Amino acid sequence: MGDKGPNGARVVAVVLAAGSSERMEGRDKIYAPLGGRPLIYYSLALFEECAEVDAVIVVAAAGSENETRAVARDYGLAKIREVVAGGVERRDSAAAGLSAATSVASPGAAVLIHDAARPFASKTLVRRLLEALVDADGAVPAIRPADTVKRVAEERDVVATLARDVLRLVQTPQAFKLGAIAEAYRVAVRERWPVTDDAAVLEQFGGRVVTVEGERDNFKITYPQDLAFAELVLARKGAGP
Ligand code: C5P
Image (cartoon, rainbow, N blue to C red; front, side):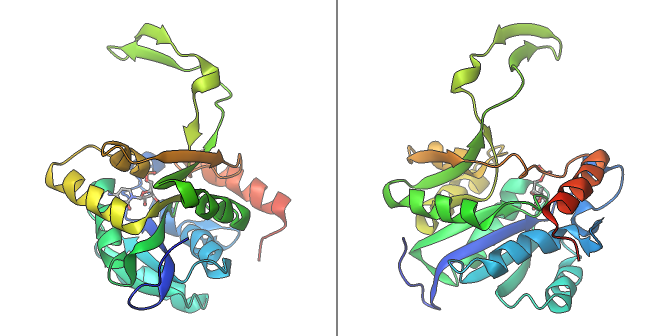
């Protein structure tokens, strides 16, 4: 699954938490309370509890690094090796995290890149992703869209109706061979590619990316009403404090 890095990390997780939460009506969603704990706690706790994961890098918004370190301290999250500042674009935050990851693991190690805004990914999903790396450069969780997807022009005119059976909605964490994704991101940053999905960066270089079964609960907190829905999911899971 991966070589031992210079500091022993065979699997390193990069948690992205440097977004501006523009669609959250002014609230920084990453520290918003969910079940009485900050949202970021759940993604950090996932990797803390995952036996396969050796080290965690957190990418925080510039100026919020100490708030993130406080969460790590308050909840005894011992796998966090570094908290680094992100950038304005998600691409730059991912690149910052990968750069830190390369200092704790070798190019042959595996890296999991995850949105801090997804509190409900499971340990089983992480395991599925890492197993898929055996014969792929990248693995992504994917689910089938429940709705039909159309392509539009001018924000309005329908240009095409896409065949649903070949479409997938892609989530995080996404798993990669560290050397391959770090190298791909170096080019993406240099050439300022627009990036909404980490695997897409590797796909540009012809890397083999495969899907594994994603999880319906593993949605991303994006809009204010998503937090209310997340409270219901948490209550159903019985995982509240
Ligand atoms: O904005 P969006 O919800 O798509 O962000 C997905 C994840 O990427 C979030 O966890 C967010 O904090 C992170 N992000 C980041 N740096 C950015 C933009 C987004 O770390 N510049």
